[in-house]
Image (cartoon, rainbow, N blue to C red; front, top):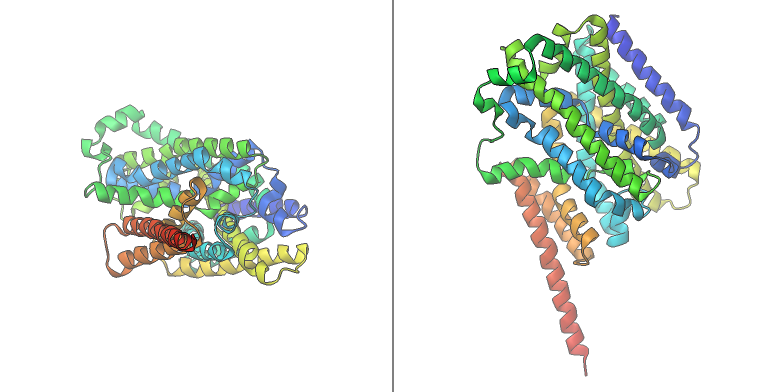
Amino acid sequence: MNLVLAALLGYVLLQFAIGVWFSRRMATDTDYILAGRRLGIGLVTFSVFSTFFGAEAIVATGGSVYEKGASGALVDPVSYGMAILLVALFFAARLRRANLVTFADFFRQRYSEGVERLVVLVLLPGSILWAAAQIRAFGQILSANSALSLTMAISIAALLVAAYSVIGGLLADAVTDFIQGLVVMAGLVILGVVIIGQTGTPGEVLAKLEPGRLSLQLDGGVIEFLETVLVPVCGTIVAVELVSRFLGARTPKDAAVGTAIGAGLYLLVGTIPVYLGLAGPILLPTLDDPEQLVPKLAEAYLTPALHVVFTGAIVSAILSAVHAALHAPAAQVAHNVVIKFRPGMGGKTRLWLVRGTVAGLAVVGYLLALTSETIKGLVEIASAFGSAGVFVVTVLGLFTNIGGVPSAYAAIVSGVTVWAAGRFVLHMDTPYIAGLVAALVSYLLMAFMLRRTKNLVASASDP
């Protein structure tokens, strides 16, 4: 076993031990899901940052910028970072003030139990795809640093992250997120400083680049540009992984402030993979797989000890993201769907039900990780799947009195149906925008029809 692999396994076991330690404080499913609402601004900040700053924020972003220039950063970190900031400004305090256990509770309060369950089921595939992306990334790292085949490495990665996710709840995750967030930042800063030493100052590097590589303009027109931006923005605003981080905050203010600082960290640290992608062609002019840019730079320019630190940073990002991607949807499945059919279950039984659901979702994520081809492809589908209709229902339900249960059903079903048909059947360039428009029109049309019907009934009943 080489030094890097041994260090990685030791690091994962340390995080596992921390999860076991904090799991002793959990007696019920609510403790597991919300950490007793004990998270202050600091833990919310690092939990938000670490949850979303996953493998794709390092590996996929660096590769995308290497391939496309600055426009490759439009989705990550720019769109994702701005989406988290929007959540901090307009959503976090409102949702925390509602004393929700899970995001799906909002839809029961505003609409009905049926809408609550539908939201859980519609958002579930996106979360599993997100987890699959992290499992595959972890497997690629294990395979690159050992003689393991990619299939075996993904299998080991899935086993490790499943055990890690099952044991620790939100409190354990928040504490390890703090550690992992620091490791991520340290690893990226180290690599960035070393690369600057090899290529010159950022200003000197940018001066050597073709002007086109610094342009944020994408191929296509305004509509295609909006499609690219709206998928991560809308998908992030209704991501159960993000919402679950601040629902455990002590106060609504802690939820909003912690999420805002987390967004700032995301954008700031996210500039390092962007810079590596811009400088990459100078150091590695011929690279078959752009997603290998950042790992190859680390391998080529870091000392063995620093390489271990950097690889640990990527694993830290993966562990945080995959835990949230399994923990948050599993909590919704157990709390908002399964427990409703067994209301008499005790606290301990509900706790193990949530943990069992985490394990089940980990198995599904593992199978998807084995059959996928790229991390980026999994992440793109994860952000878009089911979120168009849920975004419309969330915004109109949270900020207006327009619409009710039929409107919510119509928007969610039409949103996911139109998006899926546009992407997988019609192969549209803008399936997500089509899904958003369909959801919005369906919601408002149903609300108008119901209001008109009520008015006609009221008029007919007047003497």
